[in-house]
Length: 227
Image (tube, rainbow, N blue to C red; front, side, top):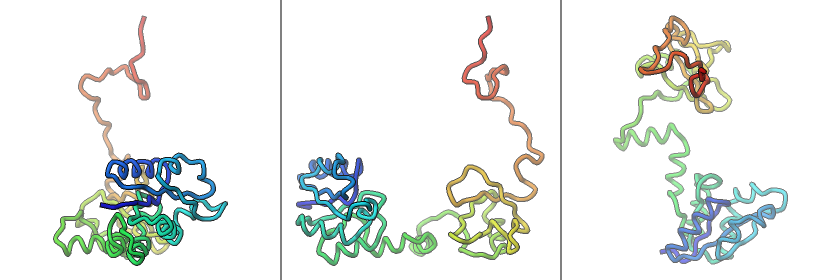
């Protein structure tokens, strides 16, 4: 069991970690930049150390050097990143290992592997882990359309930063055999449908649910009252 854990996070995330440490009998250490000097998480830990420089609060929580330095000052034998900030940064895991401090999370090698979706999927397939149907990353529109035909429509397309992926043809317009329907999807993703199955083309209106009041208009929570 750890004797003293530094939580490299702030707010409710850190407070929950402090509570878990207390229940496990471990002392806890908080870190905070100048701007968070009055934050509640600073007061909930057994010890607290200021990190970073005034004017750059987020930068302080993202500094591997500051976090490991605070852990050394406090004599902590473990660092817990919570989520967000440095939780998926292999550099923190590696720095903790080099400093003889336990990183409460995956190893640096695991974080490097899972930090790239394509590598992570390839590793899962190699290990025999079932994964969703997908295609290899490519900028070739025809290749992506063929892969989409094999997977089945509709499909999700993840466009890489700075690129167009399957969203755009080389000339800047939509792909030759697929057209894009922009809906409410996760950031950076689009839904691709067959040209003959685009929304609104030959679509029938869905029948009302059984028992629905035909007087109800869209947007009304209850049918209008009649006197």
